Image 1: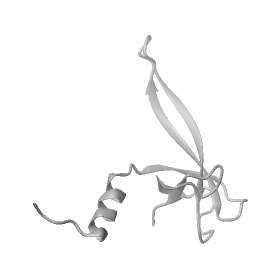
Image 2: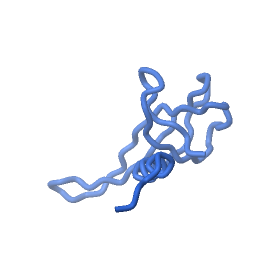
Image 3: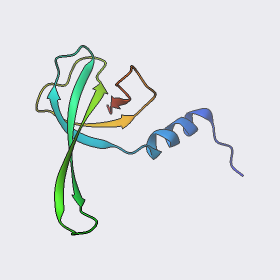
Length: 89
């Protein structure tokens, strides 16, 4: 068996997290942006496709992202009550 170092294990954990992409809707909060994610879903019974929209509060440490920017983000430990995601660098 190969031995995995702590650095390798942390990179494996980061790679296993799903990246979500969306568009910044609001940047009025300090170190936080609100991101809108559109998902195409299929109705179970009627098999019709429809667009579902969800908003996420994402931690932006340096306040770099502005309204209209497309960003990728991943889940992390809770930063505050509503923020559980952070921007991928």
